[in-house]
Image (cartoon, rainbow, N blue to C red; front, side):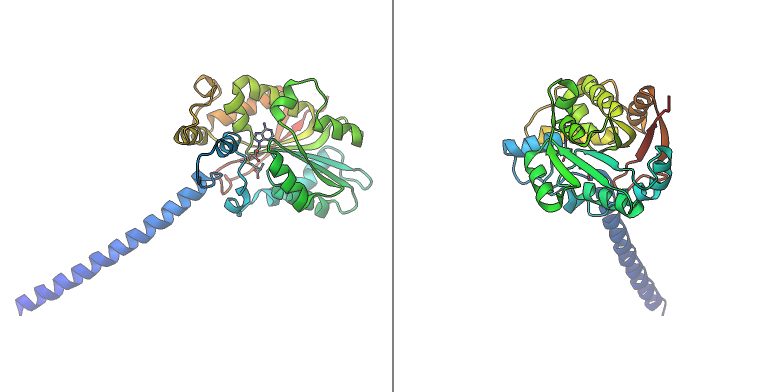
Length: 294
Ligand SMILES: C[S@@+](CC[C@H](N)C(=O)[O-])C[C@H]1O[C@@H](n2cnc3c(N)ncnc32)[C@H](O)[C@@H]1O
């Protein structure tokens, strides 16, 4: 009898162990998926390391970006903030055109969504949007998929634009539309590539440029962990180090890097108006700054 109970006990214990291991396995799998989603983020898988692919990774010019960023809370967040923002810059009334510049627009999906959100919130106003990107092919795709009279795309390297006096696509657009500044200027997940490729000075020049060309600035910054992962990725591709990576003085985990960039924007005469309460699905904040009234 005793022997029988011990046998039953052993079987039950074995079943319990199996069940527990299964649960642990399921938990680990979903945890890994969650982590992959929030950390590896805008890293599309690599097939080979041809020089054009290395170039693409160097600038984050991912051609399948939106296949890997299908869940996107950013347009909704911007839409939620729009009524207050438009009042702030006195663009909430009929008859006032609204201008938005999206730097690093990739294939135009997010730019198009921002355009739609603005149209929903201001149905009586003319919305005029320009998206620019360093990658000519992406600009062509954006134009083919989303381009219109009111939603234009142009090839421009914002680092070059900000450090050269030559007329560029952004200035040409502003001349054509007869505007001194944009109402909104967005840099979503793009400044890290400028920082890595052109160092602190290069990033400061771009920040000076974007600050001087807008009333409202929308920034989505990548954190220091993402910089390290990205630099490691370039090494793995055999593309070596980013020239400026080891000399960056704006750096640091736990939001320290983002704070330094944010402080610089504030020093250029801007105030933080809105900040996502939680990090988005890419583990990033979207911060909106407004030009101080003089
Ligand atoms: C990671 S993707 C982000 C795309 C889009 N802004 C978004 O968040 O959905 C970065 C984009 O910035 C562009 N980019 C990188 N450096 C740039 C530069 N110096 N000037 C203009 N675009 C740039 C890349 O080609 C790429 O399309």
